[in-house]
Length: 370
Image (cartoon, rainbow, N blue to C red; front, side):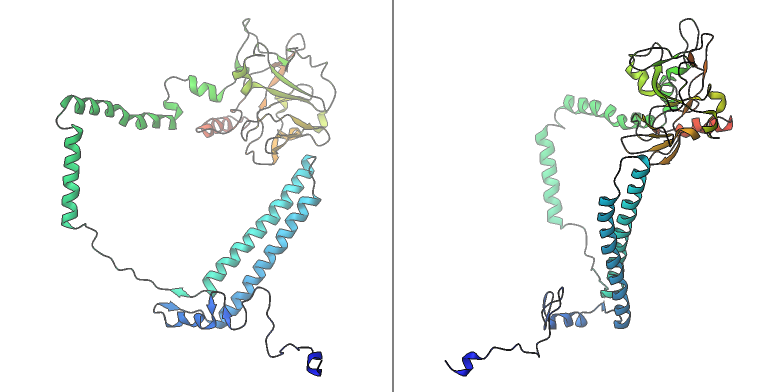
């Protein structure tokens, strides 16, 4: 064994070290280094200013770094901020939404700056050619069309032709007829409008008396004196409509008992009785039952999309996608002390529909709850 065999091969210090994310020395991402010079000889290509490109590169790198940090913050927020209450859900959604927004926005801004400030600009010219087909091709198409028409018998068989035109005429009017639905005030009669804007709470019993509030499921009327525990909540329906699913889809209520000092300005005091407030149970977002109630904060939560309403302040929206408060139903008691409705809701319940704004404007002009 010679001395040369004991020698350890030393790395060539002249070979530059390769950095992760970059091509090997002497090459580009798509080929040799000479490939990067090809664009310099292409007409219509404007290369970016090198000094501006270097500044833009730093800005893009900063944007991508922000995206990285925001994405890490999103993952941490998902682990740290657990849900379980309206407050915790709000904090979690705020942290997740903010971090994800910053991450996507940073990435988008970085890419835009990259394209506009670092990449070369191209001026392209596309020559326009005659659009018309050759005369021979046009003659072939015309002959084929005439041949097909003759083979179909459209010209020869008059009865077929006339009945086809007769059948197609009303089909052409179908879209015009459907356009009437864009304005339900043009619908035949007022029944459709009434179904959207009103509930059965505006109806009377056979004896001409207002409808009583009864417990959902049992149909038991409610005495105001018996519903006297602050923080209590009941799901109630109109008397006589306990099994009418179409009516209950809009008329179901949640009844909440408050201490007098807990009620805020958003609650219509003359629509309450002894601290008892009635709100529509139908969420104003997409119509889910908003029936989860947090007694300490007086928050009503819709479990579908986490819309949260402040029951002590007129069921105003404090979180979530819902755009309007839960409508309040005016209530009072009858001669026997049972809770009854003073009338219907002043605004339509549930999700939005076209022309809803007309009803709300009318209520605002009258000073009602909108």
